[in-house]
Length: 210
Image (tube, rainbow, N blue to C red):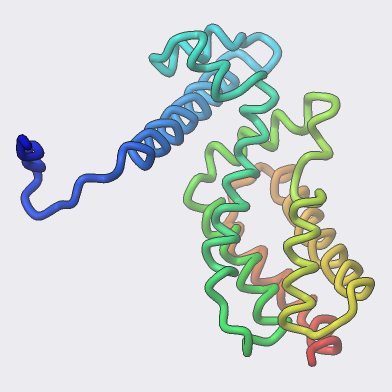
């Protein structure tokens, strides 16, 4: 049997083909998001087509549509990235972490991601404010609510009904804070704003910690 071709980078184990495909898929999605927001910033959301986004990203029209069915889906990919940032931190929390610290860790994980990608996030909020039907797709939605509710059950030992109320209160505060951030130009640190929000909410969360 012929030997496998050596890896061009010595000592590195080649990734399985499915992993390479997944990475290329994700890189293409990111290129499309970046290209779309470049165009939205230049001409406005309504004046940009999917074909133009594909051309700017350097991919075919069919590739663009395989990644995103509509340009609205591209906008909503921005808050989807926040879920990844949240999961990466929260999934690794020790079960002994308190309810208030768990909620605050999740909020800060997202805030750090936003500060690191602030131009795209600012542009996304501008589109969300201008396009009917997209403005309700920010922080408070079913996926976020279920994540923080699960966090409340795990780290607070509360019942499901209480967990949902706590999750809704926390997310409502974060959403209001982000609305204020976006409406005042989106130029300040989101981490600092979330830290302030956390401080305001800690007494409520502490009261329900097990």
